[in-house]
Image (cartoon, rainbow, N blue to C red; front, side, top):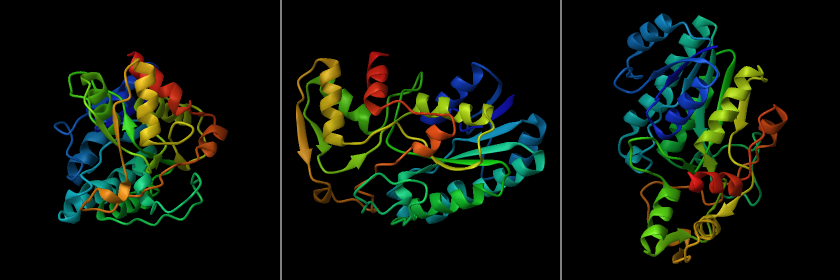
Length: 280
């Protein structure tokens, strides 16, 4: 299979490109190679590549900045997605696009599935939800919601909430963590493996929750990380409401990934994923 990965130097994109290369012919494009906000360039580059599948890993994910720069967020998270989806349709290529748990308002009390109505509460979240709808202009199209990504990119400094927690634990510094924000962490390698599985098996197109199985508060995740590292759990539990943020964020973010498993791409537990990540 010929696969074009767009946004291939990001945290998720690098993992997707690496996993795809194990079994398929891959063209990996970073921002320098393809500015997704330039429709003519997107059309030309993808037409030349003639892929069987296009995987879009780009995203404007500056959640707070999006509140004051909505045009920038929409340009990448929505308008560019429409362009890629239309090009994919014209090439008869499968299209994969990643979305986020932020499309929900965070008021749930049990893991949300793909039938849960989205209620975005920020510019960023709204732009990502619009991107979901526009991605579906391709046929077949797969929209995969991920959240709380963790995983490292060679040559880049680790980033994300988990990386910050692990760095603090290893340095012996107190790690500030939410005791009341519930998440389903996503190891980028597992998300990449699931993505390839959907494409290889020609799974039913549509929306999927692509997160590691289970859920926990950030405090519980941090405690498990400390245990696996054999380090003291020097933590500062913090209440979600006590931290001021420009953009609203969902507090309860647990996602149900049963549909993904039924499609032939079961995800390991977040504890299993965390152990593999820390062992590397």
